Every structure is written in structure tokens, then in C-alpha cells.
Image 1 (cartoon, rainbow, N blue to C red):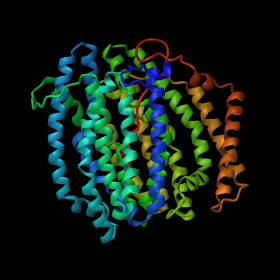
Image 2: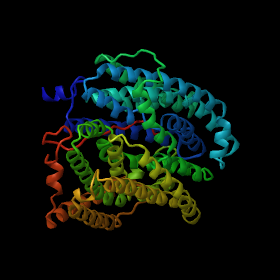
Image 3: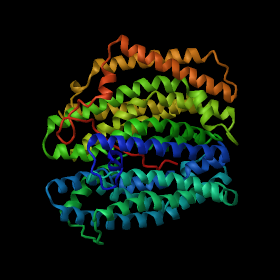
Image 4: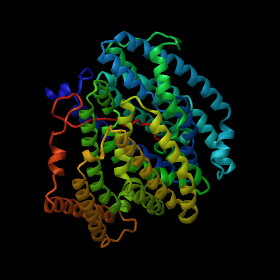
Length: 539
């Protein structure tokens, strides 16, 4: 009965139950996402048309970012949650209607303009493409562009549900989106080629992020009345908070764009980087994202209630747990990169040579797992306070400063250098946001368990090194049996080394991960901070 209540759409979750639900949903989403990527690798491999398909997501993502700035479920949640806490449900509903009406209109205009200028954008961005690749990229881009309207509206509607602590419908959106992409390829792949994936993504954006959340919002009585009341104080507050995110460019978002730009001159390089990054995104989603978007309404409530000490303690507790777990996993991911990539992707048109190259990129991406995970929490701590300008300026400057690093390492180390540059950039990004929170007295560095993080770093490095050395005894030459044996041997070695290392160092981490000693976001002792779901928007 408790389980049924837990997954009931109308169930209002605590921070802890939201985390569990979203982790389960994210895990399932990533499993389906893996099936999606594995199908693409099988059917289309890592060649020119796959590069064009991945590249086709860039302009739609730009449109969504420039117009919306990723603000649908960030800045709006802060305002909507405050209205609910102040019992101003009518004001919350009115603000919701205005934002939907105005921004949908803006996005429609932006989509039309983007459709017209797609060839010019693609020609500038993907200068290394052949004429055939360029034509395919333009075609696929124009199919994908309208999806951004449904992503945006669905994001705002999901923010309403999250503010009411209703997480099931938002969690289902990405699952449906991924299923539709796979279905598009399976049903129409032979007739339409790789275009079938783009049509599947468009249909999935309607059925998943948009429709499922709209159904959830209707069930709780959320009303919508078209309104262009741009003078509404709450709407103006939302614009004030959103503009910095619209104008700024965070490396968290821009990293994929930069990788595609530099890798466009090599056949299959964009695709192989994308395969590595998508697999790397699985632990980020489960660890970092499962404590990102869902935690925002809880963070916002604590901050709006001026419970600043609880706010700081909650953010630090979440960052500590996620970072420590990520540090342990990093060693394992780096050690088993090749057999994992080969098992996940090699079939059909994806060869062992593709696996070898992709594994190198995955190896280097894995190094930054803890940084990707913790930066999501630090960023949302800023957003919960209503301050989007400070992190925007900091992350935009870091993005600009990172461009020469990408260029230099690409010239010196080719595509591998891009993965390393990505690590360096996200390290600077996470450190900058964390430092700003500390300087402003919002979230102090002193609240982290540095000794335990040090133990996790040491154990992760040693266990990963031992795992790699043991795996070297297995010949990896494209044999499935060899992949499975190496993966099993490396994983067992890593697990044993982690358990032994934490025991020898008398680490408190196992108890901290199991226990519920952190202050809750609602002010009741009991559970760790929770957050996010996979957006499902990755190509």
C-alpha cells in the first residue's frame, strides 16, 4: 500500500521520497535512453549522417536557450513556490498564464526565423561538413525546431507540478520522449532513414514533456487563460530573474555546442563524442540530477522562509553525499571504459574501432563526474535565492575563457583534447559558483565534510587503479566474452577495494549515504535534499 501511495500522481512528496522517485524514474529513463543510443549506433553507426543528426539538435537548443534561457523550471519555480507559501494561489495561476502566453508567442516567432536561417547557421557552425552532410543537417534541424515550443510549455507546466511537490508526471515526460524516438526509428527507419529519429523526437516532445505534464496539471485544477498582461508585477519579476539566464551562456549547456563545433571536421567524431557523453550522463542524471531540479522548490521554500542556516546545511549535506559517491564511481568508470563502451554500443554499423575511440573520450569525461554532479546543486542554491545575475556573469566569463583552452587542446591532442578541455571547464564552473556562495555567506565551504571527501578521493583513486591493473590481464580485442569477463572482474575488484578502503579509513560515508541525519528542506529532521529528473532533450 505504501508503494502504491508513493507512485500515486496526487501524492505530495517529501524531499526524501522525491529523491527516490526521481532516481527510479531517471534510472528507467537512462535505460530507455541507452536503448535509444544503442539503436542509433546499430542502425547508423558513427559516420557522417549520425554526425549530422547529432549536430541538428544544436540550433533548436540554441533557440530554447536564447529565448527561454532554461528558465522554465528554474526561475518560475521560485516565484510560484513563494505564492503557494503565501496562500496566493490566484496570483500564481495568473502568472502561469501570462508566462505561457507571452513566451509561447515569442518562441513561435523565433522558430519561424530559425527555420528560415537554418542553412546559414549550419554553414557557420559545422564548417567541416560535406555538402551532403550539410543538406541533411539542415533538413533534420528544421524537423526538430518546433519541438522547442512543446519543451518550453511543458517545462513551465512541470514547474507548477514540482511546486506542488507532485513529481510523477514530470518524471514520466523524458521516458515518453525517448520511447517515441526509438519508435520513430523502428517504425519508419527503413523508409525515412535517420530522419525518422527526428520525427520521433518531435512527436515525443508533444506526447512527453508537454502532454503528460498538461494532464497532471489539469488533474490538480491548474487553469490557463490566455493573457498578454506584460505589466503584471510577478511577470516582470520573472523577466528580471530570467534575463540573466537568457543572456548568459553556462558551460554546462555550451559544452556540447563547443564539442560539436570543433569536431565537425572529422568523420564520426561528433557521433563518438556524443555516445561517450550520453553514457557519461547516466550517472550524472542519477547522482547529480536526482538532487537538482526536484530540490529547487524545497530550497526556494527554505530561503523564502528565511531559514538560512537550514538552507546552507541542506545544500552542503546534499553536495557532500553526491560528491563523495561520485568520487568513488569515477575510479570504476575510468577503469572499465573500454569493455563498457564495447558492450553498450558495438553492434551493427558501430565497430570495435569506434568503441576504442569512444572509450577514450568516456575515460576523460568520467574524471569530472563529481564536478558535474555538485555544480547542479550549487547553481540551484543561487536560483532559490532569486539571484540569477551573479552566476550568469561568472559562468559566462568562464565559458568565454574556456574557448581558447578547447582550441589549444584540440590542436595538440585532437578530439581527446576536447574531452580534457571539457573537464577543465566544468571544474572552473563548479568552483566559481561554490566560491560565490561561500563569499556571500549563503553556503559555507566549512559546512562540507572535507575529511570524508578526502577519504572518498583516495579510495576512489586506489580502487580504480587496482581495477584497471587487474583488467589488464584480460585481452580486449572485440570478444563479447572478453568484455563481460573484464567488466565483471574490474567491477568486483573495484567494489572490494572500495569496501576495504572505507573500512580501513573508518569512513562515515556508508552511514551518511544510508542514514537520514541531514536537516530536511521542510525543516523536519529526516531526509536528504532531493532533485531533478532527466530532461530527455539530449540528442
